Image 1 (cartoon, one colour):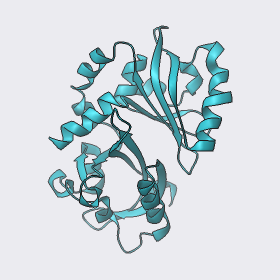
Image 2 (cartoon, rainbow, N blue to C red; image 1 turned 90 degrees about the vertical axis):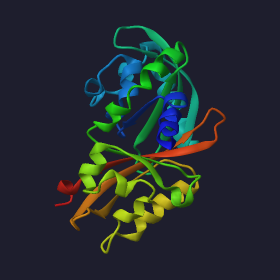
Image 3 (cartoon, rainbow, N blue to C red; image 1 turned 120 degrees about the vertical axis):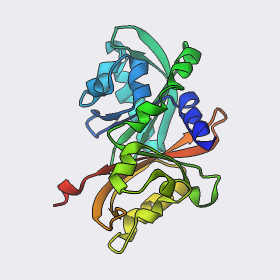
Image 4 (cartoon, helix red, strand yellow; image 1 turned 180 degrees about the vertical axis):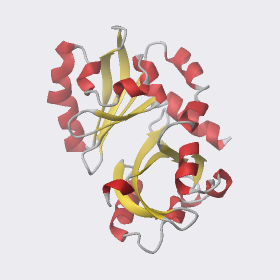
Length: 240
């Protein structure tokens, strides 16, 4: 199934996904990321990324990883992190930036990865229950159509999952949707780059809401684009 392929892309290429603000504090951590580091997701949200680094290696993040990601669009390599239990682990690490200075950090553990992948194969349900809308799309299909939508996305938009799968996310746009953020997303998708925008979207019942949408590309083991993962959050309260 395409949904299973989508989850396999996360489980093999980039097991963990997290977002950090411009101060370096975690604002979103998925189950896989937290599990690799030995935390519950809520324990990391609000914490600074330096929590995960050996003290002697923090300078590498500031002097090499972050500047490279800002200048070239992304940094990719291996990083030593420290789990909640104090164990040092080596992870395959990708850091990229959105246009709003949000950092997207994706990791997969290099040591004992097979055991982790088997455990993550059971976590589709955890993504379904995530407190933020999550979608996955397949750029090889016409219109880069959605192949997965979690429960929160269904709740956020009012559409049944069957009404979402196979469609491009443009179906949420409407009369008051501004062109600028839509164009920004389109250009980022064409360039296979992460992006974060806020735009007016519409629920099934016609109600307008402000949607903070963040998209990130997912690659297979040969670094070929396989899917886009999208995160949606209702931020209408911040625009009232």
